[in-house]
Image (tube, rainbow, N blue to C red; front, top):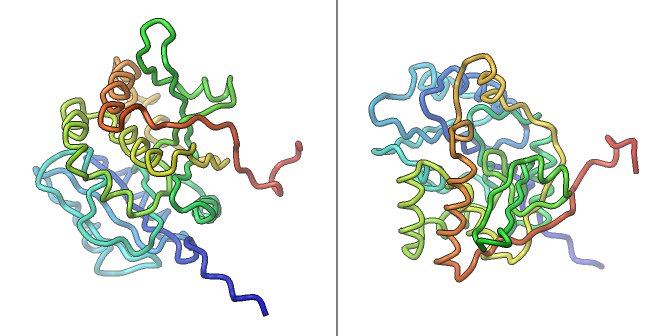
Length: 272
């Protein structure tokens, strides 16, 4: 008889790890949505605001309980690196790194975790981006999302909505990357690019791009004069190109690999 297959890595779901900063209205809607998702083994709120305590409703929510357990990891300093600084072992191997303004349907979150489970050393996400080297200057360029649409190629998936193995968090904190993390703090940018390099350095392969629609409430509110994210800042793209140049150093060259494969649900596609 054939041996019984091992339990898939994603069968237990994922630890939903949300990065938030002074957007409690968005956080409330975020928790209300993801606590209902079957794939959410827990919700971890990364709180990096030493000047303000987490809202009272969050503490009441923890006491009341819900479908997905919730906990808060409070940090003494405001740093984007806290997104990848685990204070406790996550409840699952799979960690869904997500921003407080990104809403992914529960069914798509399950598909994302299942896709990741097929290659758990890799990262699986829904927001791909492409990087390229300038032929004249030989410097790295971070390209906007429309370049993925135009070329069909991508080099990374953004950690504003991506699943990765919890072991990569320790690699991100390695002493060899101290200068890279300091650059993230100095520019308040690029922690997602650094993590993409950490994973690509381990896999030597492009990430998994999973087809799924998501709602970016931060971008929607920006058009109405609401919350402004880092990506809306002037010079954002140029700064990320400079980060790529800097991050190439500790890895002995930029480890990001370019791919062109997209994972989609054939049941939802009418064009083959």
